[in-house]
Length: 359
Image (cartoon, rainbow, N blue to C red; front, top):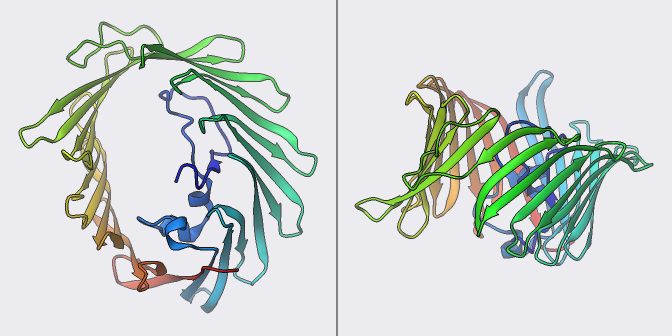
């Protein structure tokens, strides 16, 4: 999939904060803007041979009465299973936005136009021969004025060495440097545009997975320890500690076949912050929880059947909030999604997806 859908979407506004070294990790542009792709579970565009997807929505209880089935999106793919255009539509049937994607090998340019066909912004992605992102650039308006440029270099092991971010006038705004001990990340440092150190992430840890000593100012230590339980499951314990000695603990559990089983995070007082549990061995459910001071604030439950998500329920502070049901055709392709309020009490909207294997 990495070489099929090459185009990568990075957040439009990148701000420098005390984030770990994977802060700029990109996401798939295709899966970001397409409503249908957002619901897509366990299927690739290539597997389905899809050329076009048209999405519709129907709202039964709108303020002005029931809204009939109206078009919301249209996405077109080329013979290499890559998105080439994406359109969004308003409820009154007029065009809202149009995106186009042009490819040159792994490189691509994404352009966004308004309803009048005027270019609003462009995003450029360039990769090296090993598919590593080397340039990300945002431009605004028909004049293609520079808004932000991000340049990344790598070593022979494909590990990131340096990432520099430039602002509107091409002036360096921040820089990230990554240092390694062999193949292992040892330290990452964030600088501002003038070369001042903003924050350091240290990975120099004791064998038992704890920091070597007290952290310096503006320093975070990230340590990992690998264990195996009595059932053969792999346990990865991650400890992230700040300069005051406060830390967040993460526990990731994998089945012996490396399938993710569960993930938990705790604060330094032992309060649980979040958890994600999946019965992937049987592939029939997954759950995600968020907590504040040890008390549950959000709960998402996903139900699967034959590898496909058929239901997703959301709870806030243990109260039912919303539910989505998913329906598929004989080819296991998503054709409808219903959104319900307060878990099955009132139908809020229905999304329909017309899928074509030819244009």
